[in-house]
Length: 290
Image 1 (cartoon, rainbow, N blue to C red):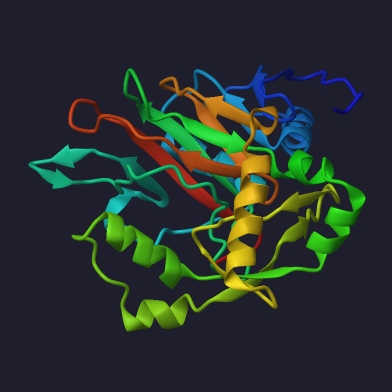
Image 2: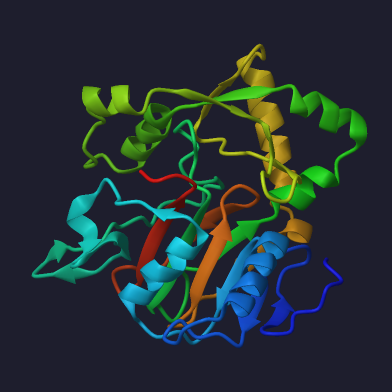
């Protein structure tokens, strides 16, 4: 980790190789350029940042997201927060028996976001509005340290590999888990046609390399037989998500968490959605305007 001191914020490491809690800032108040520069440096260094005990202020959540990059309006417009099209509601919120948030409570699937588009998102921000008393944690994996721990011969081999990421392939699996899910339209298939992504990604800010893994989305690795592809992805994912490279975030109401999508993996965990309410505000952050 960096030897340079933090003078305007307090940074407490959380995971074995990444992740940090940041104290000394509150999104309700203006943040100085000096303090933000340190938050930004901590973000590059730790890749997952937790700001605890933050107020539920959508305007400020959007403002903080825009400090990182450009906010996107989610394709599922019916779940956007009123007056704030940059924020999508995620959870099991219902009104009059109708789901009012994007509900995902499936099996754990490690991935990085938007891998099935040419330029994946650079980050995401989550704010915990309501959380269940048990379950619903988010797991993060340090795909950067995981790659750096491999031997040099394997690093060199992996750098030369290109994976094809397919939204249609992922959607087929989601349909199998939820038969009521609407099939992917022809228009969506054209819009989200399969795209190539490097198996090893070099971060444009830090220069560090990471494993870009999303096994449920990868339809092929160019030039590799399917069985070999499946074995490689399973082995690398098991390595990257082993205890030495993972952090489990147990949410508390008021947590504001943002993560670097270019150097980490993540997965949701299940909760008892029939007994408990879980509601998050989420922004998706791009490096260019959508």
